[in-house]
Length: 187
Image (tube, rainbow, N blue to C red; front, side, top):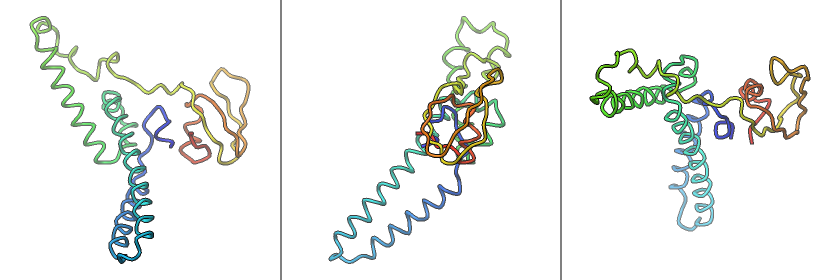
C-alpha cells in the first residue's frame, strides 16, 4: 500500500518479495499434492495463492510504472537508484537508453536541430524533461505507533504529534521517514 500511494519510488522490499515468491512456490506444490476429493480445500488454497500473486504483481507493476515515469530523474539520482533492485536498476538504464535513442531519432537528428550543441541534447541536463515526484502532495496515512512531534516544514512553528490509530491527511515529505520505519502506513 505504501508503494502504491507514495508519490516517489520507495526502497525495494527484496527480502519480502523473495519470501513471498518462495511461499507461493511451496503453496503450489501443496496444492498439487492434494487429492481430488479435497476439492474445496484445493479451491481455497488456489484462491489464496492467486490473491497473493495478484498483490505481488500490483506491487511490482506499480514500481515499474514509477520507474518509467521518473526515468530521467532516476538516471540522474544515485540516491533514488539505490532504492531499486538490481533488475529494476537494469530496466531503468535500458529504458533510459531507449528513450535517448528515441529522442535522438525523432527530434535531435532532424534538420532543425542539427546545429544545436551536443550538450543541449544530453537528457540528464534537461531539467524540464525530468519528471520528478511531487513529494509535497498530500497523502492519507494511518498511524501504526505513536510518533515523536515534528513540523510540517522548515518555516512551520506548529508541531504535529501522531498517535497510534489515527488517520491523517498530511504532506508526504514530512511522513517519508515515518513510512520507511513503519510508524505510518499509507492508505
